[in-house]
Image (cartoon, rainbow, N blue to C red; front, side, top):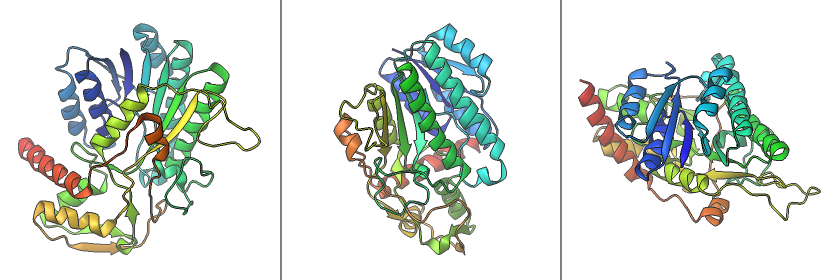
Length: 337
């Protein structure tokens, strides 16, 4: 089928696109190739997609409503995967407007395109950051998420609310995926694994926040891709047993769903760093720092709902995923010279 996928030159977007292309779908890829991080990495990802005859790339910003609506009208996609966003918790502290433009205005433009062009299913990236100040682990889609601790998290929570509105008003099937700390080959340079690997191989110290007392549900990219595609293939439907007097945040009387997509094996940050040391064969020099604003102590995903819905559970061990990343990183940097 024809699928419009935004953020196709991004870490997750490139690999979801490749999966869809290889199974025979037609992918209409959208990306603005902004300079939030090294554009050459985005171009290298894009170069992996352009050889496919069923891939068509459009360089545009989803915040540009006129251009995006024209693309919807021209291509008439059956389904949409929205992975375009301004990412990063810490960046949002200094550049809040970028998050409103991409994550709020851009997402509204996506919803409008889906509404006016009879899209069968919209799948969009939410984030584990929506759980904010909640310390009840593991995080469940049935928990309230009303206390974000960063603007990035607030925009992702807003996306979920906006999607529900369109599911209710226009019967648009929408599914939000709360990704938990995605890592792996072709990852972002602003994320811990990339920065730590780069520094350790160079013999430079790495900054370790909250004195290393952090836990994350690190989720390997292949598991994220598989879960995303399985959900895309199963459009959201109303929860026939929904009780408005006891509303469930994860479902609705409208065709609306939310799922955690995580690894279910929370890993202490120091164990993650050790896995990088093993994979690189080098000892890290640690620069311990206090907790950063907008950060949380721990994340852990309850993924029972996703397992029931599409019979999928993440399974890649951190040690294996980190080794694959380090192998890719060495190859990628050697090729760049």
